[in-house]
Length: 499
Image (cartoon, rainbow, N blue to C red; front, side, top):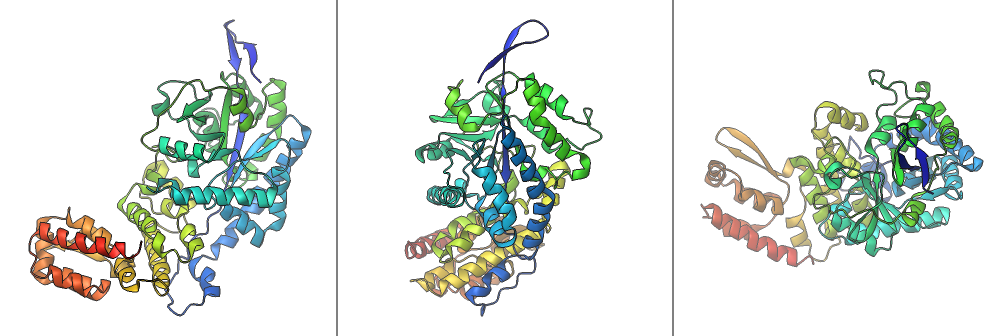
């Protein structure tokens, strides 16, 4: 409900409600010590693929955050004036079912509460929305919706894509799935100076924008003693919300903010406990996102051609696809669909965290990436490519055209083609025939001549990829154009066998 208050200058302005949401997610981290085992049985694959650290982290975070924070929130929900929403990933629910059912019960109580709303997302907290073909994205959203109904008897009507990843194409797809609204980040480059606290429309879908400053005051600055406004108290924060004009201040946080990122000793739970009463004193209403969308017509439209997210200072997709390693892994998993005999494992490999761990950022963003990663960027990439290559190699055994599937497969790092010149490695590596063709367009001429003269291309294609026909067809090729044409024609034929 919109309220009218007087500001000190005597002018009248509308005071926004607060719409508070939490993202709750745990990935299946890949095994840091993964070694391909061609004899592994299906029942042993989970132990082979995934790190024992997953259970340890889940139980630690449940003890420090999920249990105390959710118990506290349940108390506040029961008091009546407080409301909030949760976006719970499918991989989190799976881990809670395995290792912490009492915690899952707490989330179930919250999800079924009249003052709480469950938000939709992709089941695997994945990067599937960035795929050229949105089929997989749609399937994962539906899987998540089915899981929410199975667990909590609710179907989400508001959507939050992985880490708020958003563009106009995603909005269009989400609208076609009949969601009533979507969250994303309130970045100024899509607003052009307009308020983050209004509802907007993108391709006909209502959009709720996260208030970056008021969200990050809690998520990043709460325990920062060098912050000029430290310490942040509930009454001060409620004052800031009360002074915010608009429809609703959308404050959306990683749930782990409470107890995990900021330990109990920082006073974070005391802050959360005191907030509802401070809001009530100031006549700030706590509202759910579906109510915001229903109550407020869009104040304008937005068009987002370049993807945005809530990640890092850039607020784009560079947290997952900002360097060559990440792009290689992204294209590799996208191309792996024909090999997804183990569909669930393919989807686990789409979880955004794997790509996040591969980032090579510096400064505060680099520190945040390092905090969340269980191994360094290069190890994360090597592990990922080794696991993906192993998954595909297992799938080839049962595929109809095993010859084409073998040639087109993703390769582990040790079998990839590393382009070099007379002085050594030049920084380009091909992990598949697809990538090999792409790199043939851009590697320096002296590198091409270096490898042609040594017969490296022919040897790699024949001995590693296992394609004697292509190896024979490039024998005698000495020019870039001829190499590219031969590889391209052969690659297109091979892919036609897998469709």
